[in-house]
Length: 94
Image (cartoon, rainbow, N blue to C red; front, side, top):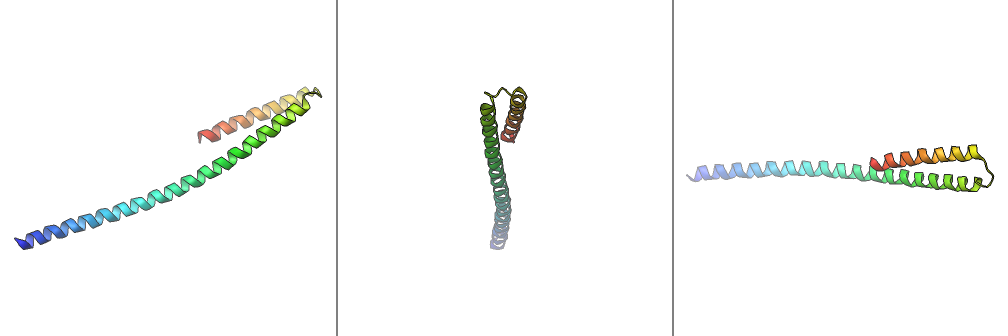
């Protein structure tokens, strides 16, 4: 009887050890994924900041060109702003 109980307890301990090992592996995988995602977020934030600066610069150039009446330049800048804003939206969605 005691021998059976001992064997049962050994099985329980082995099961628990196996579960602990599985959880440890899962935890490691999650930590790696978290680091990877944080890195991607930082890249996207940098890209977003650059795009915001580009849009601001294009708007500034557009405003400074308004009095000159250069319609072609204004249209070109508006198209570039629109394109950058679309890229910005796509970046935000990612």
